[in-house]
Length: 578
Image (cartoon, rainbow, N blue to C red; front, top):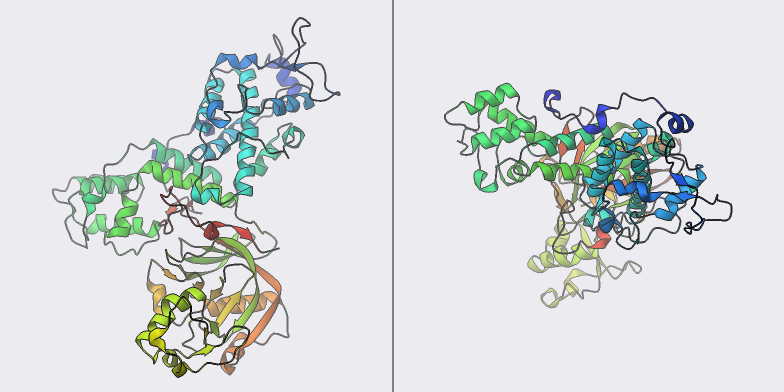
């Protein structure tokens, strides 16, 4: 995204080339960590030593007085109930005892990697006190206080692992943005599981599925940019092609800062007496719109304005937040799997990390969101009927039937006694004027055919929400850039291509070709022996393979704390794949 000349070089990358490894013994001798006073002190018999964690440990303890060099304020917020300067004192002492009281963080590259991972959490703003803790580590590093740094880094690693365990157990935290509380450590914690520290162990906690270092570089650059002054009132109304832009210079500065306009273009634009939405400015706006998943028509409307006026610090926070969301998405490397990214309105099939198939999709509208969960397609139905869901029955079908008695015939629908007893109920036997949609006892089913709301094929998967992928006869809706239009299920533009992919994926000769099933018009149910994993995800900011920042509208409001609690069913993140 950003021109390398304007990238602020980060403190964690300055020494990244120093990839030498100092063994613990060499470090102990050559750096003088144990030369004067070691991380342990032989206990003074006039002072009662700390009780050993178990009977097999030596009668020595970690000397925490090294931390007296600075005031560790971070623990007051991170772990107010710890009763200690640090959060996980006993676990840290166990880690040092298991390592024969040698330092854990003598490898410089290892330290930088840990700081980088910790900063990725700090930048979300979700963990109170973690920024202060990272600043304390930076201070000790700057002072070259290796003993104190080692002690605080070890405790900080337990804090980090507690955070990772928390979001793994409760992934909804990443969508409600509830503060993460570290007051009670997990009972499953064991120092021996995490230490002695190595780069291999740190690599296991590095966020996956994204270019991590590039993403952190973008965050750092955004954080270093001076705040812009562009507001909604500066871009009020609809600014069409050729229109004058009152706040043209402020807009140009934002486009320049975000690399949608070159330095030469910015200098040229800002010299103009009147800036209009044309030429260089128009093309820069289109580039911005493409990066934000908007219609790239150059017209500045409500959606484009909302993305343009976003503060740089908020963009940085959203990138950091989405890094954490990426780390909690299921990773399947041994076979193809599907991601449906709801804010991106796209379905992609990944195989060995590469995109091998993609299609536009239509997702649930704001008042009927598509749920976030994991599952696997186990059934494909060609020429399906549509069993109208309860919500659509009450809110859509019954009101339309009450308005026009021809609605059912026009939409090839029939009324059934129930889903178990599928006896058809004649529509003319019902007094529609007295029907209450909330108490209507019957069900609606739409027959197969080209006008069926599910189109000609649907893809079923286990879940509690009646969510599935399907075709649609309303092809024109895919031309829209904003496609949150459904009642929860996901409509797939290239549904036929997806069907052929799934059939080929089965590698079974006894499955009739998809086109043949389509042509005969009969309902065909294909049970899949090779299931295809599906993850419904919510990602609004990421750095792509070209090092370009991609942003998407936060259509469900999951990126910022909400006044009203988000309904937990929509962000349950359950896994039905097993």
